[in-house]
Amino acid sequence: MIKIAPSILSADFTRLGEEVRTVEEAGADYIHIDVMDGHFVPNLTIGPLVVEAIHRVATRPLDLHLMIEPVEPYLAEFAKAGADSITIHVEATRHLDRALHFIRELGCQAGLALNPATPLQTLAEVLPLLDRVVLMSVNPGFGGQSFIPYLLPKIKTLRQEILSRGLSVELEVDGGIKVDNIAAAAAAGADTFVAGSAVFSQADYAAVIRQLRANAEGAFEQRQ
Ligand code: DX5
Ligand code: ZN
Image (cartoon, rainbow, N blue to C red; front, side):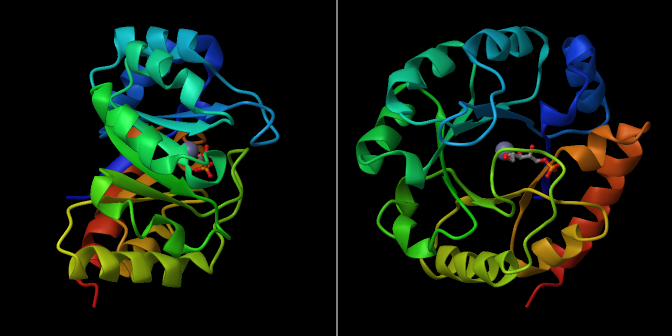
């Protein structure tokens, strides 16, 4: 039920293949890959070439988070590189419906990310088309930032919406997730958690992932 998706943005890039294998053995459910373009967000990270290399070593689904604009011209290339899920930003396309259908046609799961200050109303129409919603709990661009507290009521509202519409969309929260705040996000209704610096800053990835999962599971089960 609870999924932990380590973000390789905080991994040691000189040993990327080894890091992916180690974090999978440590219990990662997905490998979260942050793609940044220096335009939609103020940072540059990785492209399809590196995704393709990760795909060769990974056994877990690749959860791609595209922070790029325009995004449409690159969807096919990322699918071909081995993405299992492609998440695009609602703020980065004018033709959301078309882009989401295209991701599905490429054989990938479709995800939609919202920046912290973007209202939930922007996904109302497309919610049934989605495999996951990614609520950004930091302003995208960098790992290691702090969780923005006003995300908690936003997570709660989205969970209620998903339940009331009888959908099975994953509710992923991305940014600033740590062992000591994951329970609050789970209690609000998130079921999937990106964790970059929380995992890769520790020597024992398995211990952190186990702790993150335990804290999230308890809180998710007991949520009101
Ligand atoms: C932020 C990225 C996140 C980030 C998470 O733009 O989308 O996935 O790497 O890193 P932490 O967990 O360190 O906030
Ligand atoms: Zn991300």
